[in-house]
Picture 1 (cartoon, helix red, strand yellow):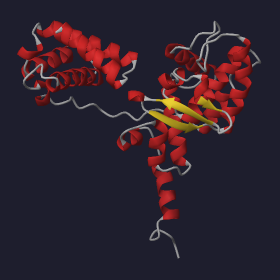
Picture 2 (tube, rainbow, N blue to C red):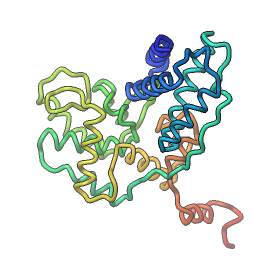
Picture 3 (tube, helix red, strand yellow):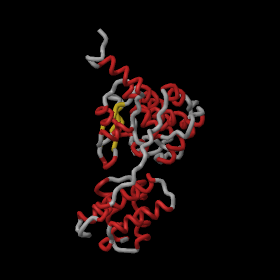
Picture 4 (cartoon, rainbow, N blue to C red):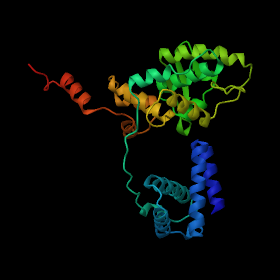
Length: 291
C-alpha cells in the first residue's frame, strides 16, 4: 500500500500541482485507511471503505472530516484504476456523507475599513501588513496564492497581478487603487531589507512569508478591531466575492477572479440577502416595474 500511496502523492505533486497542505492531508488519510484495513489495494472492496467510514463515525468525527477522507480514498482508487493497478474502483459504490452547508462568514464594509486602517506606523511590518490586508480584500486571493507571489508577477503600471492558482493554473487579477497605494508604501520597505528573495511578501528576516504567518497576521488585526469570531484570509476572500456581487458584478466575472472551475463553488462564496435581491429584481425586471 505504501508504494502505491507514494506513487499517487508523487503524481499529485508533479502532474496536478497540488499544494503541500493538501498533499499532507492525502498522505495522512491514506495511511490511516491502510492501517485500518491491513490489506493491499487490489484486495480491498467497498465494504472495507464503508467499515473505515463507520469507524470514523464512531469516533464522532465531523461529517466534513469523514467526507474529506472519503474524497482522498476516491482519488486514490481512481488513480490506481486508471493506471491499471486495480481491476475495479471500489470507492465508486460508496456514497459521500451528507454535510450540512454552512454559509461562509463575511465582513461588513465598515469592518473592512476598520481592518485596513488597523496596521499603524511607518515600520516595515506595518507597511507589509497593510499591503497584505489590502491585497487579500482587493483580489480575493487564496492565502497560498498570496504567499506564492513573486515581485515579477506584479505589473505596477497596469495594476494587475499574475496569480498561480490550484493545479498551477494562471490567471490575471486586477488590483484596486488602495491595494496599489499600500504596495507603493511597502515596496521601498521591502527593498530596505536588502535581501535577494524573489518573493513579494517577506518576513522580517527577508524570507518568503509562510501561509501560517499570514493567517497569524490577519487574526491579529481581527482581534485588534474586536471582530466577533476569528478572522482568516479565507474570510477576506469570501468578503471580496460578496461585496462584488452586492455592487452588481456577475457571478461569471467573480468566478474568473476567484479562479474557480465551477460556478456552484462561486455561489457558495457569496451572500446576498433577500431584501437586496428583491430590490435588484424591482429595478431590473420589466414586469416588476410600476407604471
